[in-house]
Length: 303
Image (tube, rainbow, N blue to C red; front, side, top):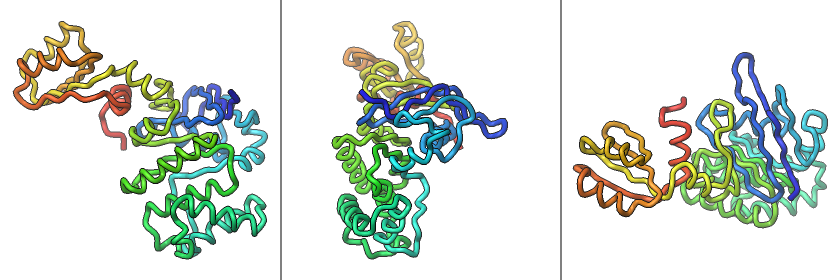
């Protein structure tokens, strides 16, 4: 399969701060590839290097087989970027924002109008095309920014936390549209803080922290590899439960008032623990990508 992005030993520094440290990954044509990590992990710094906004310090980076340091202009003509910031012109209408942006790609006026109409309908915004951007909700603005990123019919769509701050209805609409784009062969590079979003959209992903790669793989494989099938949460565990788990070689995390237990087959263990060690609540659920994320990057706040 054709490789769209090939990053080798990427490093990005800002003075003494190392934002990205020896990061390597590839993205294949037609897949949705996710970059996950806590605040300050280096996600945005990485994708800004991919779309040519920020020069890499060292390493190699090729997009469509082209070197981003020498052929950035050619690469930019073939990609679409949806940044974190909603940087629309607030005084222009929705449609005008798209038509003005089309000029950067030398799209003829008639063709730009057709594409704008198609994309506004695709993003369920055609009923607001004559509204000023400043008068729209946050969810609508994010969908306009995404429509704008698709205006030049890119071969690679780069999304930096595209659904942050959206209500559930808007978020699910964006997910449905991205799934449709991926089904039609568009390559997508995505950063997100929503583990459900990553699990649903990403064919493969990496989790990074402190600028470095922690793990890479398919979401379901990462869950099985680092957590197991089930997670057992015990609130107010009785004394002796941690020792019992240690003796059984069952992996767990203790937070004083709560134990998080990672198990491959939890039926017998759940019954035994619930009968002898649950003075509070005892809940077993399927393991998720969020469990992997928290186990690898920790639970402390990153601000």
